[in-house]
Length: 120
Image 1 (tube, one colour):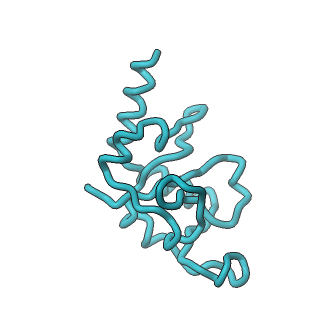
Image 2: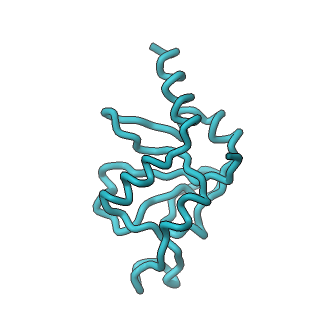
């Protein structure tokens, strides 16, 4: 598994949004369409530690995931929701969030846990 990776951001306060949020290229803001989302290299997400991987109250909030695993989950957005109806997007619902968390890049999560254990 060498990537490219997306950074998936599943903040609980964004659960009401219609689509899952991914980071844009170069850590610059957020996007729904996968075409607007940034590709991140394995070395970058591993080096990034808690910047790219965050757990709050035992729930995985932000994490790298292989783009190739996300793309099959994507669909066209509802007309009028995104500029130019740009897609594809990933629907934001509890089933999809659980699936994304299950497919999160394990080595980055392990690095995050080790980073936090070392800080304690």
